[in-house]
Image (cartoon, helix red, strand yellow):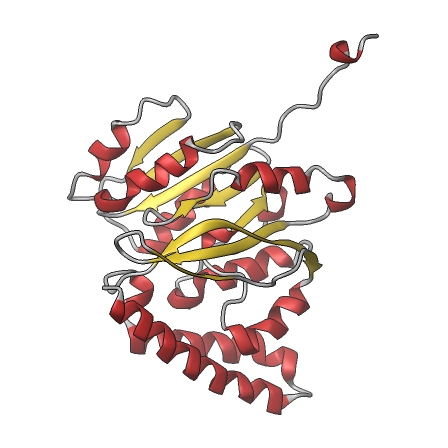
Length: 279
């Protein structure tokens, strides 16, 4: 049989969800970053949380048949909208993308290439580094889990929490296998500021994470963002999360555990300064 006639594997499909409330200023850029992907096998559902601005009009301005708009009649809690995204996941992989963030054009291609390698069949999260950008889209600096390509376990991530607070990062950094989403709690309202890390730790109970140092997403920071507009409540979220979810792993190394509080205090002040400057 000629090589060209060989049966080909079905392409891996990616279900992308954008939960949004009044995201008109930025959601067009988020959607365009999907349309610009070099890997075409994705479908997007935008979950509009009863927005009162032009969010729906912006979404409907795109004629791509891979894009679906789902409108919630009455505004619900942020995390309830995020969990709506999880309740309808289809395909092989799940990508949550916040409405004010964006993906690099080669994001899906590079991660699917890693996912299709036989030795990575048990990997549940494919993460990458990200570039922070200002409210106006100016690129600021690169952050991420690691500067090297490697496989990291849940324990690796928990240890990294001590010095990095949320070592994996915002939802856009991680492409997750759909099979790893079964029987997980989902996005918890118990720790709003740490909701993405809590989600990552749940998924990592099903398998390891493969991290690439390539910069494959963009995280927008602004004074009006949820994570930057409630500083003292955010600190409370972190303390509760750290005490309940992280401390049990450090009972025999409490000095290292308490060092995490000092690291968080320093990083929180730095983070708030960056948000303040880029309002």
